[in-house]
Image (cartoon, rainbow, N blue to C red; front, side):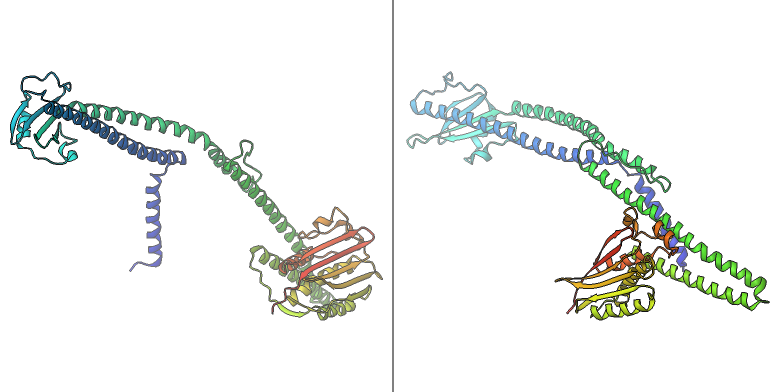
Length: 474
């Protein structure tokens, strides 16, 4: 019995052989398009040639039938008028048609000097016209009987069809070689046209091959006629813009995360060194070091949890357990907790709406706490923080307003970016967090299909409005 590894290696070997065989039949798109169109064109040419051949042959056949029918009428009229005898044949103007006339029962009146028509006439019987004249036969015969009841005469006509068949065959050869010439002409023309119009694809391919991790700025040229390839190039460039932006954000994210982790790691390492040197002899050093290590470990844990939260959001697998709860009671609880924490600030609450909301209790509380904590952090002592709860028909509004230092117009568009801190706020207050709080709060609000509106002015304060849908589930 083969092991699982051996079976896998065998399958991979077979797959490589198949790929190698299929690669021998790999053709470029120009060749494929040309070949497909030429095959269609050949099928069309064959159909046209068949219809042309059958049409010409039928036309010649029907024309011959009409001529022989006229000749038979001349013969019959001449007999009925008594102008036909066995020695006078000058009246008959159809030189390429032989005829044989006889009166029943087989009494010969006039005959031509042709053994073929004599033999055929003497043994023939009356049958239909189209079966009587064989289209593919080198000899075409026509049989007709006079309508005079007093003197019934039978007429048999013969025409040598070999020249007609030769003309048809010659015409068929001309059409055949002309068709081959047209196919070759179409092949060459289509190949050139396809190469011309598909040249941008080759240019795109070469340009895309230049794109690497170190060169994400390469873009496709979209100058030219508006067509599908230009749309494709534009879509590709937009995608590359997003990829480059995302890649730069990831690089910045990793750099900022490393920077944030470097400080607590250095602190822990320093205090661990102190414990190793003096902590065994000095209890105060040991206590101070252990407390510092614990604080920094807690800070690192908070940072890592924040990073994991954002990572789950980026991967799209974040889930929130939602429930229906009273939003007024919820905000009352947050106000009480804020009063306990923000003893240096005056916190005012105006809760006008008393109703339910369908949301994640813990996550929504976390987001609102982040905004309130930021207001406390950047509002001087004895400053005011006003919290209002309002509602419309379908939405709930939570407004957090402070009279703190505010946010500059330059910083305002970036405050939800990860690890971003407004320099002025950091300098004025000497208080810095991980720079992930607002990013996490925005993710939570967005997960609730909500939105955030921020208005701020330096030295006058900031107003944050959270707009959340009620989304009540019956």
